[in-house]
Image (cartoon, rainbow, N blue to C red; front, side):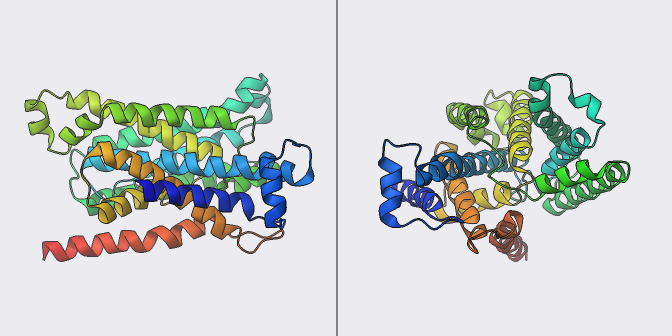
Amino acid sequence: MGFSCLCLILLFLANLYFGSLDISCADFFKALFSNNTHSHHSVIIYEYRLPKAATAIFCGMGLSLAGLLLQTLFQNPLAGPYVLGINSGASLGVAVWVMTPAWMHSKGNWLTQSGPWACAWLGASLVLLLVLSISKWIRQSNGLLIFGLMVGYTVSACVSLLSHFSSAQALQAYARWNEGSFALVSSQQWFWFALPIAVILVGCLFFASSFDVLLLGEVQAKSLGLSVATMRRAVVLVTGFLAGSCTAYCGPIAFLGLAVPLAVKMSFQEALHRRLIPLCAIWGGCAALLADLLAAWPGKAQSLPLNAILALMGAPLVILVILSQMRSRT
């Protein structure tokens, strides 16, 4: 755990140091610990890089925790917000909000700011409820994977139909959001983005033993006194909230919710959730920071697509898990 925290701190400092504008090491530490918050370097670090790095940490934590809970609920290592179509449902919700007529967005400042988040949460929760219902008949990992892909294709078709009737301004706003970025959350919005994720993370630690019992199977969990139906509803609400919030604020971030729990389980050989939950949270933050750091590698005015970096990081791990499952079956 100590090594994991050290990696998180080092990656966090690296994200504060590297960026489109080169800052010398002396100027960096001077701006970081100086009381002069109006200097040029201090403004760059505290107004742009710090909220971006903190958003990456909490987005990685939220999506990794959502992936861990879904893998526990379905007892399926391929379950995750992106693979099961939950991120796609959140994307559809945001598309509906962004591409609706402008008069629907002029009913107040609070509604304008919370509208995309509420639509993303609603879309993610509806898709998760659908997947939860289908999982009663589809027990195989490949079946759920194919179903999630079909949900993604259906959502893409719906977004294409919406875009056909939308204005160029709405299409541009949705395309910019769809690229995915940790810089979309301002310093004023960051507290309301991070607080619910932190509360859910702490709350899940209190129910770690219940998640361990859930891994034993529905029959065994009921015999031990666990209300499986209540746990399912709670996981649906929590994962829908986490995926919806992260997608609404940061765009459709892929592979974090699927790859990080798999990597933690394979690396630490751990099954107890009182250790899996903090490890997934820490390494989710590390993966998000690393991906953002690699995306900003070209520097200056250019940056690589964040989702492309995450796909290159997560896809080989998922392929490795699928191959290992096939080998164990044969």
